[in-house]
Length: 449
Image 1 (cartoon, rainbow, N blue to C red):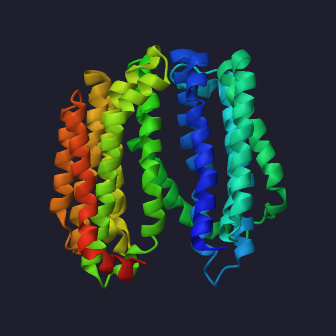
Image 2 (image 1 turned 120 degrees about the vertical axis):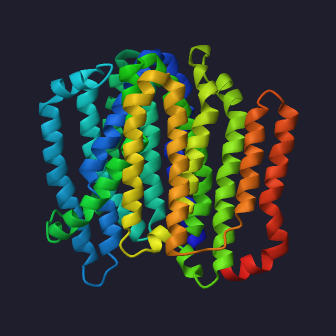
C-alpha cells in the first residue's frame, strides 16, 4: 500500500471518530441543557489530565525505541502493554476507591457513576492505544480505521439510546461499551504483558508526562477554573467554541503529516525550509480567518438559541488556537538543539503565565479576560520559540508574508459586520499564500517532493 493511500485511510479513521462527535452535538446539547453539558465537559477535561498520567508517554516511548536496533519491537510493545495494564490498573483502582472525594473536588459535582465510568473508559482507552499503535507500526491502516470507526459509530448509537434516560451517565455507559467492543476487535493484536524495558520506558515517559501536564495547564485546566469561578453556564459556550476551533485546526493536519517528517531533511536548503515553514504559518492564519467569518454563523444555525453565546467566542478562541499552531511551526531550532532544554524552559514560563491567568485574571476580568490572556500567552510562545530557534538555527524567514497575513486577519476580525469586505480580505489572503508558488514551483517540487 502506498504512503498516500495509508495516510488517507488513517485520516478517514480519525476524521470519522471526530466528525461523528461533532455531528452529535445538537442532539447532545438539546438533551443535556447548559449545566449538564458543562458537567460533561468537566468529566472530559478530567479524563484528559488523567490520560496523561495513565499513558505516561508510553506511545511516544514505543515510537522512540521500537525502531532502535538495541530493542526488540515485540518486547517494546509488551513492555508498554504491561505498564499500562498494571500501572493504569493501579491508578484506576485508586481513582474508583476515592470517587466521592474526587467528585467533591470537581466543580459542578458531576454524577458519581459518570465519574466512575470516566475512569473505567480511560483505562480501556489506554489499553486499546497499544494495539492501535502496533497497527500503525506494522502499516495496517485498514484495521486501524475499522477499529476507530466501529468505536465512534457504536458510541453514537449508544448515546442516542441512553442519553434521554441517563443524561451524562448515559454518555459514559455508551463510551465504555464501545471501548469494550473496540478491544474485542483488537484482541488478536494485544501484546503480551511484560516489563522487560520498564526502567527505560519510565525514564523516557517522565519527561513526556511532564510536558503533557504543562500543556494541560496552558490549555485545558482553565475549563475547571471557569466552572469554579464563573459557574457552569459560562463553561458550556466556551467548551463548544473551543471544540469547533480545534476541529477546524485539523485542516492543517495534511500539511503537518507531509511536512514534519521532512523539515530536518532540508537543512541544506535554508531558504526552502524557511519558505515552507512560513507557508504553514499562513495556513494557520487562513484557517483562523475562515473560522472567524463562518464560525459564528454556523454555530447560530447548528445549535439552539440557548447556546448562541458560543458564536460570540469562537473567533477569539480561533486566534488562540492559531498562535498555538504557529508556535509549533517556528520551533525548528529548539528541536534542532540536542538537549531540547529551551522547549522545557519556554513551556515552564508559559505554564507560570497560565497559572496567573487562571487565578488572577479570570476572577477579576471574567471569561473574556481569560481568553485574551490565553491569546497573549500563546503569542508570547510564538515570539519565544522564534527567538530561541533563530539562536540555534538561523533561517531566512520571509516574515513580511506572515505579517501581511496577520494584518489581513485583523481586517477580517474588525469588519465582522461587513461580509463583502471580509470576503475581499479573505481572497487577498488566499492570493498571498498561493502567489509564491507561481514563481518558485519548480524549486518546491524538486526539493520538497
